[in-house]
Length: 470
Image (tube, rainbow, N blue to C red):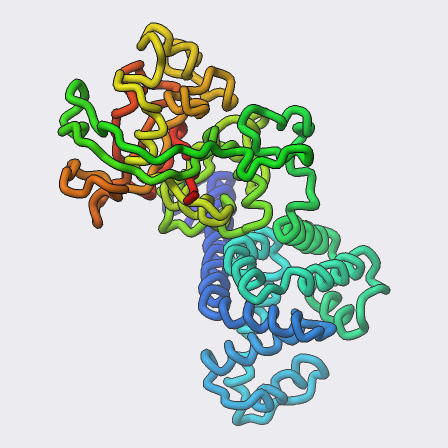
């Protein structure tokens, strides 16, 4: 070492710093490599382990996780070590547990076995890695729990584990041995495990959490989505649109709004208001598929519910504002879950026009638009609470402005040969949005205005309302 320092004229202090830095880099590389190796292995065997765990839980096994781990280990060893029977690892286990010598012909096999066991053990006590591995698997776990209707069974298991973590003497004997062997009851590891269990229970039973700080009196809005026992309305949050004919499109707007053509539409229900964060929250509380952390990535652009802090936490004081950052797929799935559907483009325009042939469904025209909708000139650059402006003649709030609204149809040129309940093109690339938003000029709020976007798109000014058959 002295020769190296002398040869390259490096001061002893600088040489020490360099060695220290190299040591950090090497250790980081080792930890990173270990993490990558363990995560790859987890991903490879994750599905089987989750299915086993839920299956053992439903059967009422006292230690479903231990049984699932046992099966997982066998799968790993079968794949990585080429074993066909669990008994083949017996000698290795006896050596690890009791120090009994391994037969010479199994030395290499047991060395590989020990390496796999140590990789799993060292990864489980690395709390940051363990948490990341769990969170990556959580979507699949929630999906499997819902698929097998195992919420209540898993809750019993969670409560048993939380009791065990609270007091090690409340663990079963075999379970206590396993936790001690892996964690030695280290407080940091146990706290991470406890946090993940509590988080899982919260996601399984969100309806028992404090979903919102809004009081019931604040929810009794003109939108009617809080049911009053004294009301007997069939759909208190919806308006029934009578059947009829109207002229769809406009000669004064964009080329995509032409030609003006007469359309006939059957009667249908449509929401009085755009779907709010509160309503969306109530659905995701019951239906994990639509949550921010679990909604499949192929159905959105990566910014789904971007303004929500967590699966069950919309932006503060936004509960009664339209839900935004939702893709067309999310809007359609929500409507389906609550027994409704997205309106067709023709239905939406008929409901918006309300029999008025002008650019807006407003008596008096654009000069009175600020009384009926939020747009660039009066919104202050923000989306607003629903139903704060006047409704159109059909009793629909925010049909002009506040948030664009997804409708069912693919975007395309109008066809005039299908004049009864048209559904738009059979195929396409983009879906239609209607109504304009808080950051648009008045002309974008016209009843006939059309815009298009990929169905996976999510924007801070796009929401939706639902429709339903009569």
